[in-house]
Image (cartoon, rainbow, N blue to C red; front, top):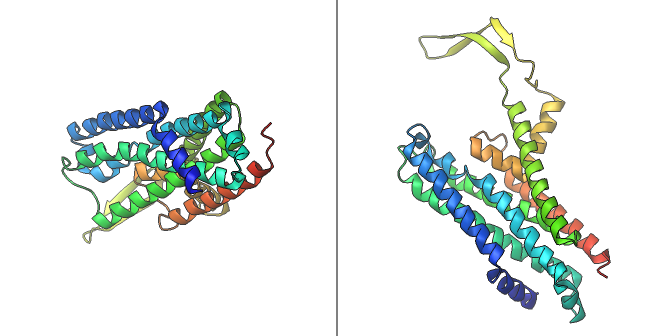
Length: 276
């Protein structure tokens, strides 16, 4: 395992596609951070701004993982590893660890400019502990997404198809998570009359309000949509970017669940895959 991991990390370090993704992630983050710094409105809460570009890094991570794993098949690297006696399970796990490390590098390239820009903000917007926990959620989401993309990359032998499917899958998951989050954040009423008492309590007069047909009432449907959005790595990222987190304490557990299931399924299927 150590020899496989060392060889994979060396290959990743020499891969131009990996460094291109890192540089693009860094440049996009610099541009986003510059906009946040000069915009007085967004500078009021810099903590959420730091997490704003995570979705961009997920797309770049998908590109990197697809290209890296696709090259293993196109150059017959996997078959060569098996010829010298490497176990399929160890090959899968070594590739998974390698691309996860690469995903961290791409994500870190996005975080550094954003964190630097935070010092120019007027208000951080949350406590240091809260920010650290949200960063932990983001890290776990990257791990989970890397596991899902590794599953796709190790099971699709054609490099071009691998790249296309990984990118499309990432966009679909991100778009789906955004749509679900939009439904969950819909207000119950489109318009209403509100009164503030002397004690500062807001009282809503529902008699003068318009029900929102898009609002999902508490119940089984809302619980299912919430659970799906919390489990999806892209759903967690979307919630971090908007600052609207539903069950943040459970998100790391969901991410490790996705990691465990994706890795287990990937190892089982890859062990039976015909590589001829």
